[in-house]
Image 1 (cartoon, rainbow, N blue to C red):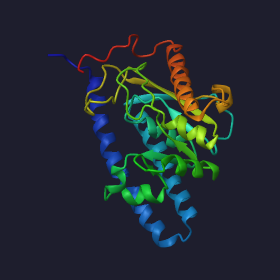
Image 2 (cartoon, rainbow, N blue to C red):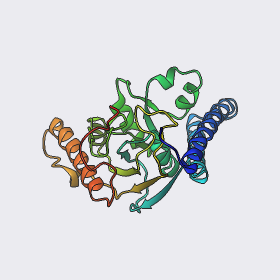
Image 3 (tube, helix red, strand yellow):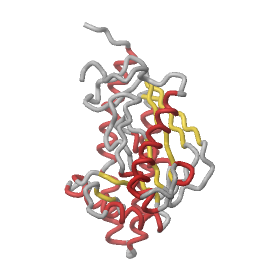
Image 4 (cartoon, one colour):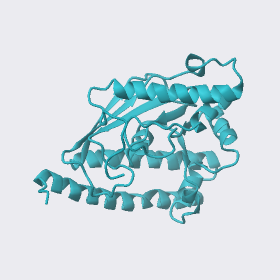
Length: 269
């Protein structure tokens, strides 16, 4: 039987505390949403207030996890542009990736699982926040309207968490939205070493040592610098998806200690 260090035991306890705090904290947007419905008249005002509440809670939560010693994170801002009316993307290895983006980007519209709109706890919050369900028939059109209004669209090109750092099986959703809306792209790079909060892992399955998380806001990409925009639209979608995947693959492999050196899934899969 493997003997765990005191620090490992503490981090398991800290993870439990974090989940409890997150669960309790998840009700704050719900309560706030009810108050907004009652006291705020215009729809735009409702949306801005609930998104600001979500942003503050996400910032509190990632800082709280760091305070407990569950993990540590560094934020690198390589992007000096105003993030407004842009498609925000990221690689996706951890359960909490979205929290870092929501904490540090204003006025974000998320593409979320449709189940959140059916859940009685979350449906009012995600509806007031103006989020888009991932099964929406006119998802691309709705996203383009929001981008034109100056909102940011958050979408993970992989759709779900990857199983190792360089897996990066990008789908075309992010590229389709960016090209249709002729929107710039802000690529976040998020890495965790050693990897934690992965797909198929329980909350208490933590690495032997504390994870270090890098959150890097990379410079804005324009469509024109990524692909040839004179090509047919369907080819542009495919080319931009490939470009973004290669962009992330290069960025990850340039890190000194990216967490998986071979393209093999972890043993428990």
